[in-house]
Image (tube, rainbow, N blue to C red):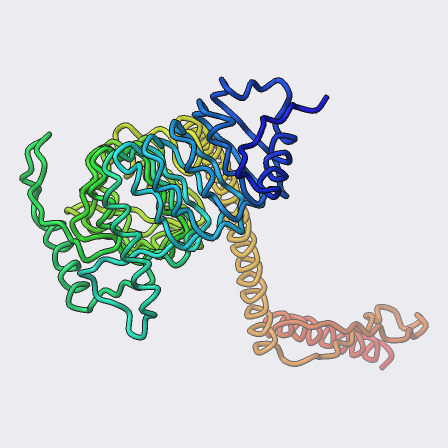
Length: 487
């Protein structure tokens, strides 16, 4: 069933009537146009709203035109009661300047619209509480800033206008400008200013803080920085500047009400002024920056959720290093969170609960189990080494005993050889001793001499010689006796 079309005015053109009819065809039939307070349309081919939309939807408060093909928002300005507007995903939207006529707007979503200017938000600046303008091409530039050499004058004028509009959003509580890659590219920090900031940081580290708890430190605002306009948002609670190519922050930035701050994927080397802006921050994301020192977070005492991965103070090998800060050794690591670095963070941030999207209690339990495993492995290793040493000691003792036995045998052999050599020297070489049987009777047949070869010493040889001489003498006597008898 087609929705009935209201009668157009007499001076309405045919084009307007056609646009109005197309728009009405997009609205669901269950929506009562005169009393409708909320409307969401998904119309990628819708380029503009009809100029009579204010008459068709007189009480509309919330309008969602996400992912459309809008090119003109002039008709939206005819909705005087509009408080919430979502135009995200309209990439062909060149300008939102007509929205300046809206004075009741509290929420404005302009994400993924390729916008370069926020001109149009100043009309509801006193009531705007949420501005979501991420993934655009916005520029910011302070009129008192140091400008980049060779900058385009049109870009500078546009950036100054954006700076002034943000300064007017005094009621804003949520500001999302993430992934505006050229947000602060027109701003240049002179070397003198960088040196002053470094000196201020060193003085802050070396001198104890004299600030009374609850007392707002007296500081002169740095209005030269493009982000200094955000300091005028005295009610700001959530701020996201991730992926904006930031290389620095205002040197005296003070946002006392901010509880959620996201600065990830930038090129920050330090958080100047070392935590003043973090007095009330509960959620802090500084991951994937170039922070040189872990101590730059030491004043974030009330942080509960922290993201620090991907920074320069984290080492690839995962080993702990240290640097002296406030007479304390501050551990550093990169590849993963270690007990040392978390111990420093918990000492600095007593309320810390989550680090890099991991519950602190879970990490501590895991590390406790790992410590037990390490202790167990260390004990087992010590036991194995002890057994190995005892075994080596026993083998050494056996080797010593074997060597002692071998040496003893060698000594005995040497001693025996010496004795044998001495006997050989004292011997009368190898003598052949001939023993002839005694001829007792002449009738006995002669026997062949018995020859016995033996090695004797001098005494034995002498004895044998005497025995032989005695036998010869006895034989001679017997012979003479026999011959005498014959004679």
